[in-house]
Amino acid sequence: MQPFLQQPFLQTLHSYSNSNIKVDVLRLDEVHPIVSGNKWYKLQYYLREALMNKHTAIASFGGAYSNHLVALAYACKSAGLKSIGVVRGEKPQHLSHTLQHAMQYGMQLQFVSREDYCNKKLLAQQLLHQHYIIPEGGYGSLGAKGAATILQAVDTSSYTHIICACGTGTMLAGIAMVALPQQQVLGICVLKGYKNLENDVQEIMDDDKKAKPFSILHQYHFGGYAKHPQTLINFINELQTKENLPTDIVYTSKLFFAVKDLLQQHYFKNGTKVLVIHSGGLQGNGSLNDRV
Ligand SMILES: *Cc1c(COP(=O)(O)O)cnc(C)c1O
Image (cartoon, rainbow, N blue to C red; front, side):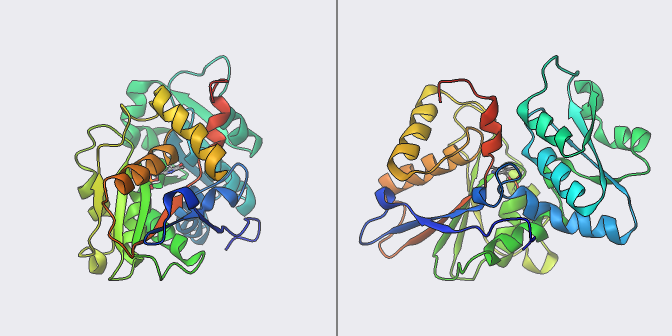
C-alpha cells in the first residue's frame, strides 16, 4: 500500500442486509480525498514500468471529468514524474474541478479537438513520442494487474459475490483474475450499449486466468455515461441519509442501485455474502449543482 494513501475499510450496509444475506462495502473512496477509488490501484504497474524504463514524463487521455487524469497527476507528482493530460474538446473558459485538481498536482493539460482525440494513436505519436503513454482510463493488462491488488486491501475471502462498476472493465478484469473459485464476480456497466465490454475484459486478463468466469449486467446505465436522472439523484440522497454512504453520479450510485434492485428481485440466495467495491469518484461531484 502506498504510504500516503489511507487504508480502505469495510462498511456493512444494514438496510441491504438481513439474517440471511450480508452486504458489505469496501470503501476505496476513503483512501484519499481527491485521488480516491480504483484509479490509483490501476496505475501502479504502469508507473513502475515507466520508472524502470527511465521515463521522466507520463501522458494519458481523458475527458474534463476524468478521475483517471487526476489520479495520474497525483501519482506522477508523488513519483517525481512529469504528467501530461490530453483532454478531449476545446479548452473551456472555466476548467472543471477535476482538471483544476489535476493542474494543482502539476499536470500539464493539452486540449485537443474531438476529431483529433478520436485518433489517439496518431496523436500520441505526434506530440507525445518521448513520453510513456498510459491508455485512457488505465485500460490494459497492467491496469488489470494493479486492480487485482484491490482484493488484498482487506480480507475478502469469506464473500460469495464481488460486485463492481465497469467503465473500461479494467477493474473487473483484475478482480476476476484473483477472485477465489467459489466467488462470483459481477460487473455493472455504466455505459449504454457497450456490447463489446465482455470481450474487452477478457482481452486484458492474463492468459492463464482467462477461463475465470465473470458476468456483466447492462441494464443499469440510467440512459448512458454520466447521465443522472432525478431518480438517481434521489437514490444518492437516500443512500447518504440511510447508510451515511456518499456515491458519485457516474459509477457508484448506479452500482448500488443495481445491488438494491438485485436484492429486491431475490437474485441472491440465502447465505450470500456480497462485497460491493466502492471505487470512489466522489471528486467528480464537485461539478454538480445544488440538486444533490
Ligand atoms: C474509473 C472508475 C470506474 C471504472 O473502472 P474501469 O476499470 O474503467 O472499469 C468505476 N468507478 C469509479 C469511481 C471510477 O472512477
